[in-house]
Image (cartoon, rainbow, N blue to C red; front, side, top):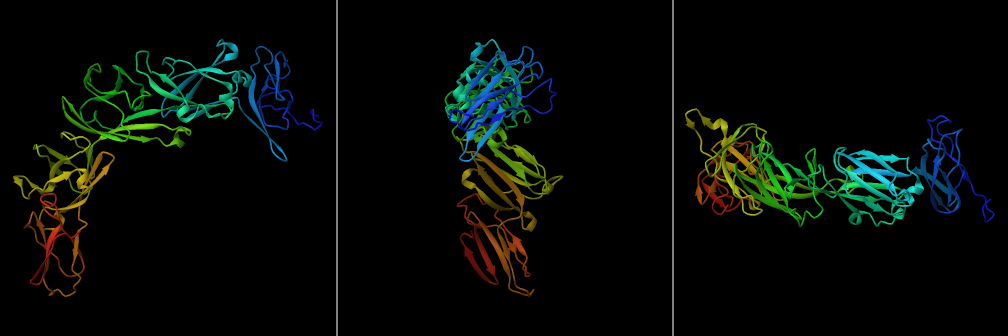
Length: 492
């Protein structure tokens, strides 16, 4: 019976899978009629002896005999209108929301002044429940530190109050999270780790800012890319680099390393952008045209943690979506081979700011004879934000000579796709083969250069322009029906 004369239920628990001489039922616990949070301990059965016990809100916890480590639980009681809900949880849960690597965690209670510590290893994107540490030791407050690898140095310890650990105060969540700084080696630069208290004994570690290199510098022969701060490498594992907390205000060095003893070939200091930033990097091997973009990692893949990611990508990617090999030529005379179905980053041009403006001409490789070209190159393809969309090119008189260039700007980058065919088509629906003459004459720079005959039968005949990006860039045509000529200034 309780002090108010009402009956109070008692609770005693024992984990399954243990013999009674290993782990016995805990002492009977009063679960009460009010909201409450406390701890219970299960220890060795026949040798059980309460040498240290404590009453806290109706719940009993005992350490048991020396040599008999307790199995600790958190007992949460919530009184509803007609019933009482009792839930059992681990006293401590550690969530590793880092995208990669194994996190080491060292934790000690203020009750012991750091003389007793618990250590645990948690793999990336995994959760570890701990039953070794007492609820009341955690309630007294803890000191905690972490390291990024089993051989990495420990970061400076942080202190967490018991109220923040078990009550939903929200003081150490989101932007208010604790920020730890950890390095991968003793002489390495430190990256930022966020530590959040999610209430009821849950601690979540996550990466505040990450960097991913998708530039392909190494594959292109420019060297391996490494991020450094003050001459020391930032923590990096599986291609993901942890950035420092003030990366928007304090620059980081993009460093290209040579193959010999990882010596620096050249470097470029950058600050992380709020959106995206184009980078034209003049290296000893030529220009690198890159774009630094900001995004986020899906929270559900990081145990609910919020993490911003910066991606370094090529500013211009060319794709051959046709079944024929292509040959491209840039204004400086360089030739680029693009096989059927291949995508390739294009570098070597001196872009202005965030604009990836450059140009090239192209032709199918099969149109090159052994003794010289049998067909002319296309007109210039201008790659920039201002030329976005699908543009048809004509390289000759036949249907197979009509190609399209699709330009799509994506947050500072350009995806340029070359494919056969055109969105511009002409159809002659006449059924009589003796029908009037029907032709399309695309007009380039005010001059008529091509003639497309459209036969009866309803077949779509694609057409394009030799140099659609030159002059006024209008899509003008002369339509000839019989002996009548009709000029359309822009068929769009």
